[in-house]
Image (cartoon, rainbow, N blue to C red; front, side):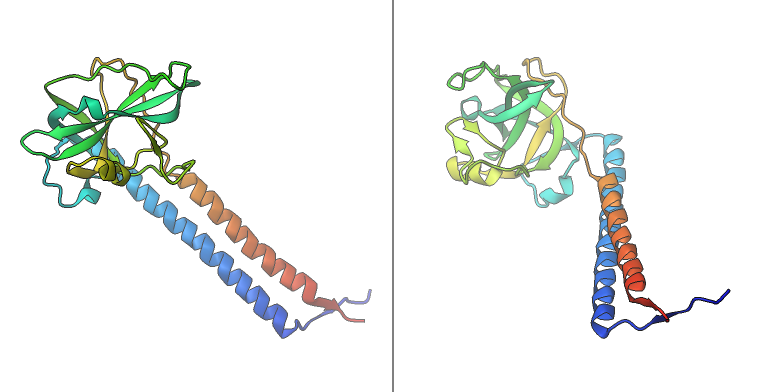
Length: 236
């Protein structure tokens, strides 16, 4: 039985294109794995934070990024008249609002925004739900989250009176003339005000990054196989 032999002499441009494609896809796969590793480290950090006692939040906040996702405790008085509602928030299939109220930190003139929880809508856009706001000095326990939500806004200006499309500390600061910390405290626990604080779990997307990495590595393997198959010629 005669043997079958092949020659492999790809043109230079095919070799260059394959090398570039494989290099790029491998780099993207490794980048996704690195992102997954970073998110895993953050997940471990969150688990550690959950076991630690809350940090007392004060007006002297030098490095707010160090408090991200930490449990904090803050004393002060709510500025109930400045409460605003964050629109289109769904809980158990019902549409409602997040209720956000500035809290003046005790012993200072500095405020911090507190996302106090979810309330159901009234069914009429022109009528906002009534919310009880405790008076006097209160102690709020919560999780520090970024001062701006990463969601799509329907316009450049997310505020329409007391209804906002998203939480944005910078825009709030431009509308109201008092010092404001660049963070938001997401309140936890039962404060007896009827608000729901069943916050969704933080999805760090670790498995998603790993799946993307696998896809990029598969693309690299596909490019290599195609490069070999398309350039291997059977000898006559």
